[in-house]
Image (tube, rainbow over all chains, first blue to last red):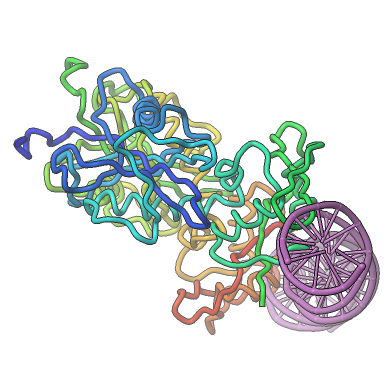
Length: 223
Length: 223
DNA sequence: TGACTTTAGTCGCAGATGGTGACTAATTCG
DNA sequence: CGAATTAGTCACCATCTGCGACTAAAGTCA
């Protein structure tokens, strides 16, 4: 067992890998290194010369075998809360992963946010912060798009926004707002999903071609 | 001179203290500890047992003799950029200070953001991140109010928003949006400022009494 | 004193945006 | 074929926004 004080001044990088699974958000956990009975976020000690982003990317790669479609730091966590590493501070990242293409390595498991196993207090704080950060950036950054595959139907996109916002949206208003924000462009493909009319596939329209004025705000709710 | 590798794994806490001075944002700098010719943000090594927020608060107190009216972490910075401490990582905070009541301790000087002296690359990144964070939280958190004294005129508030947004706002629209957001309440005081009609003083209305629906969005611009 | 300037604060129109239900379209199922 | 299901659009109307023009209360200066 490590001596607690030996880690004073050192720190870890932790990654909250988020995906949308069966209509709810889920994060990727693995067995804790120190206590095999407990679950933990993927984390690492930093090595001299590696930037924080690099360490986070390695963490994600070890868990998934690929890079998240979006990876962003959400801050440093400490404040006396316990962490498997016994360091005083950890720097947390959020990584977004489209669920369709993700296949975690052995030993890693998706857990729905609503039903997480016990985590160290510091990692629990990170998981909560991750969803807060995602919600707050929803209208500034392509959060919803990074949780979807490269092409998607507008209904899928709407469901993703409903999931992230935690409320229902009205179809016509959603599409109108989407249009005026120039966020997507149609492909020439259509997808027939069992019953019902086939849906056209769209892709995220990168900033280059876009003439965006106001940030998008999907505010409109349903009865 | 310290050996660079001796600090590997350790880190500092740095504070970007921001105020609004003569219609532009300014930050508080001091002479660097290692090189008296250079300027630096206030920073400290952490001590075992102190939370990050506590260290940041101490930093601010040492510079100002008082607490900022708002103090929030903006992230961990490293990525190989140099810092006076020779650590690999620093955790940065923004602190907001109303300029009217602030009187920095000896050795600390306000510098306008538009005309900063040379800083270490890591601290320059922090200063830039600070203004980005302030802008992005402008409609979620009382950023503008924390840069103003406890009571203020609506014209002063509008000027503060114009400064933070970097664009002019239309008076009538600004006040209408302010009303519908229930952000301020009038006091029974008025201030006569030289020529022109005296202005009523307002104060920030804390969340308790507020029934806020949508986030405020002062989007409307001037010709 | 009274015209002029300066700053505060309000009104109300016209056009843009948003919430909504009802509509049409294309497919599967039985 | 008709019912069910999902996609996509339309049009009405209420609300919100941009904006110019207005009123109000002070100082300045001849």
